[in-house]
Image (tube, rainbow, N blue to C red; front, side):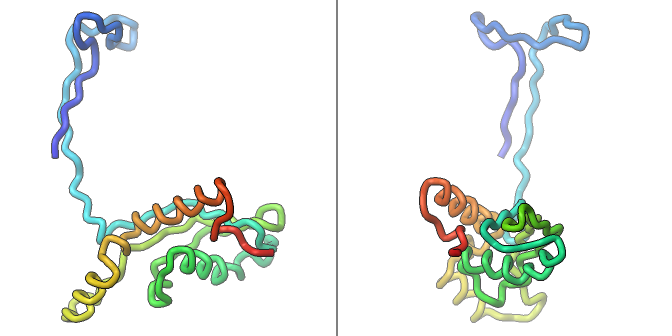
Length: 160
């Protein structure tokens, strides 16, 4: 899909104008067209900062909590244990002794890489829905759970 952009004075009553670096008005509007990229969500990954509160940690032990943090993300996203390799945690830090912050990447679903698995493909897409497995949708689910936490109780908070 293509879209057009026009910057400058539009219509008779428009007050906006485009100026050069010296403050001189540019006489003609700037016009250009762009095409949206064709993105294949099957191959997309998403990276974000994941913050897990109410978890005892220290600078010395935060690295050992990687499996626990990954497990928490897996449960929140309701992922199967076979999807563990889709979650990559980097630069884990402990803040205030009770908060773990990590850069998290959700990788795209793995493929068999050449083997024919017609039964697996058809049954998984029918039962689960291919879109649900996209890393972008998984990130959106985490974001929505986080927003629920700010509005009230949520599955994101750790019981003490």
